[in-house]
Length: 247
Image (cartoon, rainbow, N blue to C red; front, side):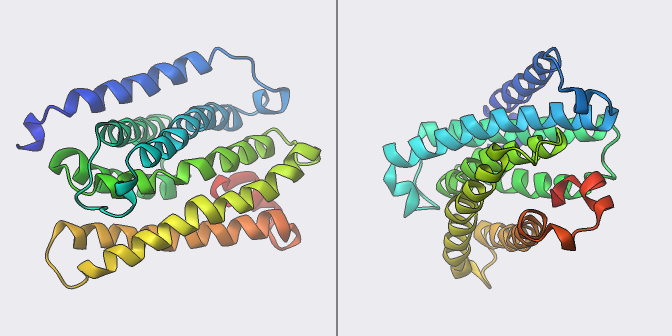
């Protein structure tokens, strides 16, 4: 069925509007004083709150999908489950919402790396949504959201200037472990799986291209994370202030 007529479109629209409504609701919450004093930090705080909520729901959901349908780990192209399909639609809606939020808030230039990531993620998810293939790959990719729970929490603490707290120091080590377990390891497994499509003119080849670009971005982010948390003297102070992806 053509994507323009696909029954998944209401699911995508509902997920996108859900995150839009969530953002509006979260804007009603009181802001930390350090965040409230800066309009950019205020926007970023609200943006991260939505991301944090998405990570909690999607991360736990992805784990449940694999527990309920373990063949998603092996039959990445052909395995399918309703829960996994809905999860991919749910997360695609988040990426659509976040892309629109960045653009309409005039943060596209400062957050261009997020936009590139979101476009690649949506391109990969749409293969599962519209062609019902590689749903298992989408679920495995979303294991990264378990890591993002701790990564986003860390970024929120930095924005709130709370790096001196014991909670931040504990979280940075937990975040490092989760980064290995739920970001680097699944990404390496998926890359190894998709390399079999190298040289073939298939949807798998297209997804392999996206995956390799995401691999590069993830390694860059990992090096920034290590420098920021474990070698802070090597990171310019202006970078800490303006470049959220390095935080």
